[in-house]
Image (tube, rainbow, N blue to C red; front, side, top):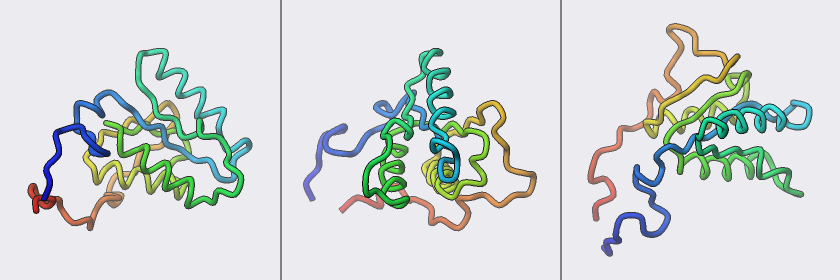
Length: 139
């Protein structure tokens, strides 16, 4: 198996993801797909010097389905260090998938002002995922 140097290709090591925050929340069924709330939150975080990945910035793509957007958004999430949640995230199927992936990847979670927190005793969204064993990708 060919070994690449750190940072080559599409594999980003922690240093490259450091400080990058993915913004997650509901879009489907909201006026303007909730883009104003996403953009306001992104602006507030950026004003504090945070590097924000805002999925609302991809805009609307003719012909794109919900699954197309989620695939693109999960790829963006994967290059971040943490996830920040907008109010209403827990009622959004897409945001719940993003949180599930973030937790499975060991990302920290920030609840922005007004964002609901899981209730005590709620199931861990990453429960039941197989544990990653170091060396799994070694040939």
